[in-house]
Image 1 (cartoon, one colour):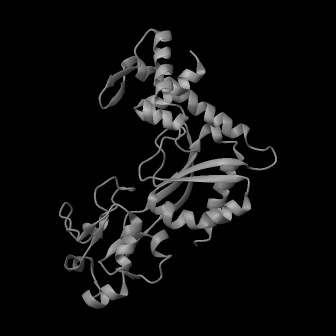
Image 2: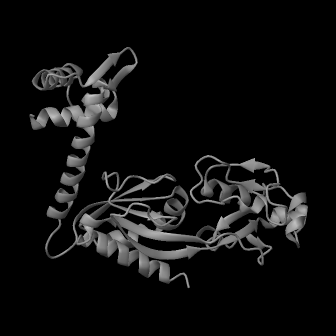
Image 3: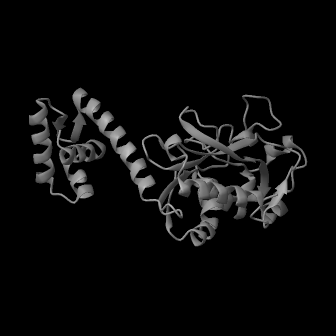
Length: 294
């Protein structure tokens, strides 16, 4: 199998169309189509079902794409290790974490890491769903749970606590709740149910109530950052992880004795990158900065 044709096939399989794959590869649609036809002819099997809305992999195409994806993932890891200098960390590091932690805690601190290691560049991928490290969707991850895959290296970074917060303006207008039961009379801001980044994120809805009988939210939004902004604007009361609440001293913490579920945060990367200098210095940077929180 010709390597160039496999590269084109993989791009088409991931993009779902000749046009989008051509844009990725800087090839014309006709050139991409010719490469796929030539590969199908060489293999004597159809790789795609062609229809008006795009392309769907055949069973044989699915099998080939699984193998090609694994090969590309291994090559990407090898390339990453080869590009590193023997003396110092260098090259691109793809980091993924949740949108809230990445935008509110990590992004404002990255300048210090990049200043310390000018030969390293960072691609920060914010997603509340886990990207597949084994398939090289990212090099390293900061996750709000222990990894489930056995071939991933993990290092515990911190344990997050929750704080219940409101703006001074909101509390002046609506009063300060003294007991969890008094939250029934307040305007709550919750995360909603769209792919929450951590389980039990809406624990505030049931605090002080019978299980299975949650309070109704005035506002639901699938972003920790947006919840913070809504709280600051005086919309209502919400629970924030401490990396968000402690860095916003303009907010007032209410019901401090009311503790939400703890969230263990892990630094995770594939076994193949265990000896990567970029990964090691980034891990050490995170540990040092997180230690400053105490």
